Image 1 (cartoon, rainbow, N blue to C red):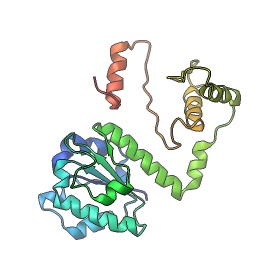
Image 2 (cartoon, one colour):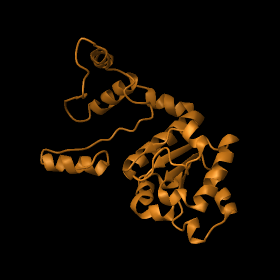
Image 3 (cartoon, one colour):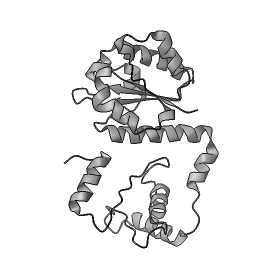
Image 4 (cartoon, rainbow, N blue to C red):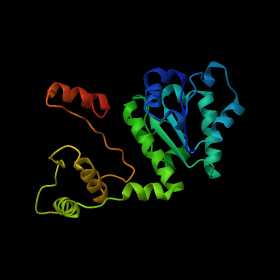
Length: 231
């Protein structure tokens, strides 16, 4: 089964990593509430936990970069990655005081990997889910084919593509579909966005349900709750 390993400092657990974990499938992650840093583990336990990991996620902070246990986890994950036993290493900076150029970040990571700074744990969880989906599609191509199947509405899809490719007009800032519930508005926009290259195939869209009782304050609160922006 495809799983991710959440490598982190225990000092980052409460305010960040636990929130990430709560937004991931429970059976698709390696996240131990009793951390190695509390003296409950050794290198063999780290190796055992990493043996069935497909995605190694490391949360980079001042605490984790100074943690011997995190260093051990990363060293073993790199060995497994180099031998094609781990599919991907995904570094995420979660500390405003840490930059890409930090001397404690290994040179191979700076050179070979896309190191992202994500201060929102909910956004980090969404991106981890995308990485897991990409790995899943690699091993199970039929799952990808199933997601990419879209029947009908060819004329509407073509209209969206033509508008996006119309260089005589300003580039659209939004795609909006109206109509009755359950007629495929979200599916059309999602398929068109992926087919046009606006987002990658494994991208997970955010849906914000609203009712006629919701006001602008409700909308702002729901946007805030997604973690995509701060007010």
